[in-house]
Structure formats: structure tokens, C-alpha cells
Length: 165
Ligand SMILES: CC(C)(COP(=O)(O)OP(=O)(O)OC[C@H]1O[C@@H](n2cnc3c(N)ncnc32)[C@H](O)[C@@H]1OP(=O)(O)O)[C@@H](O)C(=O)NCCC(=O)NCCS
Image (tube, rainbow, N blue to C red):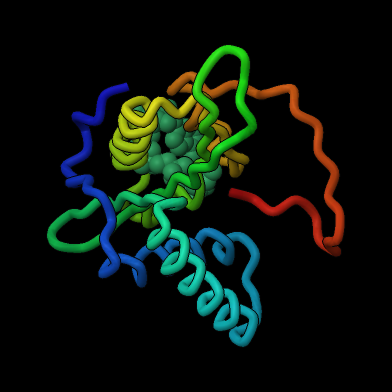
């Protein structure tokens, strides 16, 4: 897919972008399922701390898309080692918190962000990139070659259902 439609500029996120990254993750989690203010505040604080910690170690790397000086979208890749495989480097990445502000969706910005992420994963020889798609994500990711996998999973020590993205 081409990102020609998007006039957004995609770049790697810096520490200064953490508030925007956090705002996008909070929006992603609350857009469809509004929560109480105190729950949102606690989630925002925990997410800010996690972004600070994980970007500092390099486990999490993020990109932002800017247009007219404003951040209109972002995405992060959570990179981890796995045990060695017989057939390749043992790195995997989970795509997290892909989010475009509602008024800029379907303009190619998600494509531009995902292309930047995938280029970096190829450069780092990351073997597998995976994610849990949202409803709109189910329509978005297949265009890049993402396909349903055969993993099994069980939620333990949780009182909720599957957590998205
Ligand atoms: C999903 C999302 C990231 C896509 O970003 P975007 O900038 O809107 O995507 P693009 O404009 O680059 O779309 C590229 C293609 O993906 C497909 N696509 C994207 N969103 C779609 C949707 N909601 N329904 C159907 N197809 C969709 C289309 O084929 C589209 O090309 P087209 O517009 O020429 O038809 C964005 O809609 C979003 O932020 N959604 C809310 C948060 C979310 O669900 N994030 C994903 C978490 S897994």
C-alpha cells in the first residue's frame, strides 16, 4: 500500500511526544467504552509511566504522524526476544496503540505509520509482527499481509475479557 494520500509527516516519537502517545492510547481504550474519570486518570498515569520506562529501555519504540504541527496519529512496537528458533532471529514485535484521530481517518495516515513501523522491523530483522486488531483494524491490517494466526490463549488472573490492541 502507498502512503501517497497522506500529507502527514511520520517520524519516530521522542520523550516530548509521550503525552500525545498516552492521549491516543487513552482515546483508543475509551472511545467505544467510556469509563469513569477516576478510572481514566489512573489509566493515563499508569500508561505515562509505562511509556517512559519502556521507551527508555528501547523495548517500546513509537512513531507519530504530524499534520499542520499537530500530532494526528501514532503507533508503537513492543519488541521482545523469544527463545531461539531453528529458522531465524529470535525477535518479535507487537503492534500497539495504533490510533488516528477520528477526523483524519481514511486519509492514509495509518498506512504511513504502519509502513514506517514495518520498515524498522525489517531493518532490525524482527521475525514476526503481531497484534490484536480492533473492529476497524480487522479491515486495515490484511492489506499489509497480516493474517489470522493459529495461536491459542487463555486469560488468567483477569476479571475482564480480552484486552484490545
Ligand atoms: C484503523 C486505523 C488505525 C486506520 O488508520 P487510517 O489512517 O484510517 O487508515 P488508512 O487511511 O491508511 O486506510 C488504509 C486502508 O485500510 C482499510 N481501512 C482502514 N480503516 C478501515 C475501516 N474502518 N473500515 C474498512 N476499511 C478500512 C481501507 O482499505 C483503507 O484504504 P481506503 O481508505 O483507500 O479504502 C484508524 O481507523 C483508527 O485509528 N481507528 C481507531 C483506533 C483503532 O481501531 N486502531 C487500531 C487498533 S488495532
